[in-house]
Length: 109
Image (cartoon, rainbow, N blue to C red; front, side, top):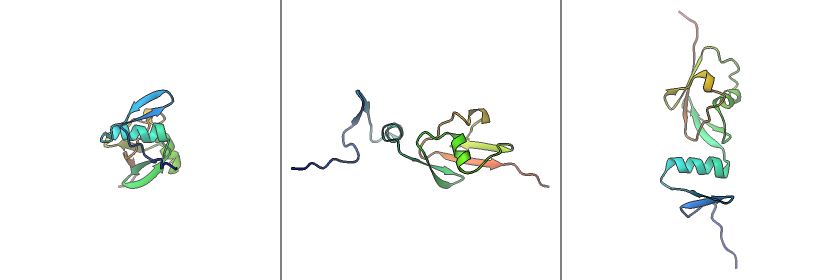
């Protein structure tokens, strides 16, 4: 006799190693945690309203490298309408469904 193993946990908890993690299906935080830490899956973010897939532990610097933004001069960046200082770009970890706004200053008259 065979048993079908669900691809998504059906209980309200999951185990990682010897630790039990409470998973609350209605909680966005726990769903993000499960996706990123337990599953190690890619995440979806929106950059200037366009969908972009990133690895689960991607930082702002990784995103900028991925979209070929090599010079950070004249660039401002916000995540979910919160401006992120350049000093935090190498350590700020993006989470699934983040909305990133990237603005580049230009000269003109």
